[in-house]
Image 1 (cartoon, rainbow, N blue to C red):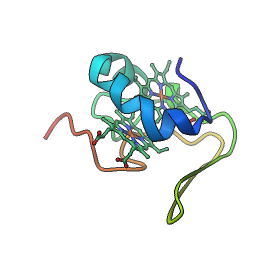
Image 2: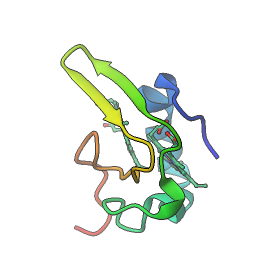
Image 3: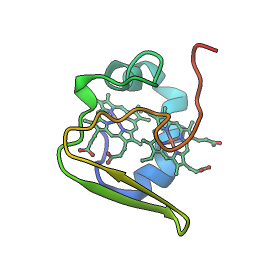
Length: 77
Ligand code: HEC
Ligand code: HEC
């Protein structure tokens, strides 16, 4: 499992790790990355201030999909 509630992971590292371990990400975040799975449920409320104008809030129990914060990567189209 990767770091949770960590802005360094959210703003930086995960994109690079995805490049090398895509299948692992898909195992929890869903094959097409847009629907997610029960393995990607948020365990507590989170607020990520990505930029001053972009604040992402996750609520407990929500499934994290990859298209929640941006429109990439796309695997099926
Ligand atoms: C074992 C299952 C699992 C795998 C494998 C996994 N994730 Fe996650 N991911 C989760 C869960 C669960 C959360 C929600 C954590 C939380 O916020 O409580 C999450 C959240 C995230 C978040 C939001 C940050 C956060 O703290 O909620 C990002 C970004 C992310 N994952 C990217 C990735 C990437 C990229 C990969 C592949 C390198 C990946 N994940 C692999 C389970 C997984
Ligand atoms: C909580 C918000 C959030 C979630 C969820 C999230 N990302 Fe990201 N992702 C970001 C931010 C912020 C950036 C970095 C910077 C940007 O906007 O260019 C980024 C960057 C990336 C990059 C690098 C893009 C580039 O142009 O270099 C990739 C690849 C990526 N994410 C893949 C994923 C995958 C795969 C998942 C799901 C497993 C995911 N992201 C989920 C916020 C998120």
